[in-house]
Amino acid sequence: RKMNLGNDNEVEQELFFAVKSKRFSEASRILHDNSHSISTHSKKIISYIGAGPRHRHKWTIFHWVAYHGNATPISLLQALLHLLKTLSEKKILLHCDSFGDTPLRVATEYAPEDSILMLLSACPEAAKVANRRGNTPLHSILSP
Image 1 (cartoon, rainbow, N blue to C red):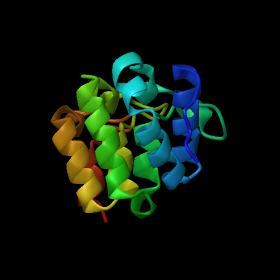
Image 2: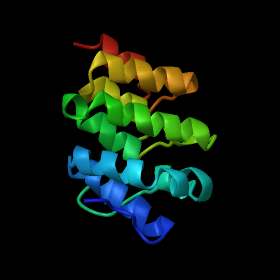
Image 3: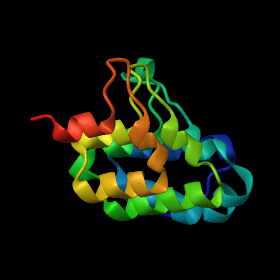
């Protein structure tokens, strides 16, 4: 079923919660069905920080994509990163959660190598961001 949602707020919430809940086919459909609206009207779509059990961590949609690791289709990450580039909003990849972790740092814990490389390519500066414990994404990659 086609999901044309009424406004940007509905789109951002539906997309965020679809990714958070591992409903990746639905997330891809939302991106596809609302691509024009998203790319021309809503920069909030990517940076939406949602409620729920990890609300206190202040995760973005990219934190959730990284956390779901191998379960996340690489095509969904590619589509989200393409949208990010279109909106000139790569700074969201530098967003730190309540522990100081960027999406790249989360990816080094949970995501496959190709996802890590895609996030790194989209925002190389994220490799230098240390969390509250002083660890960068490189620490996660090198630690056993």
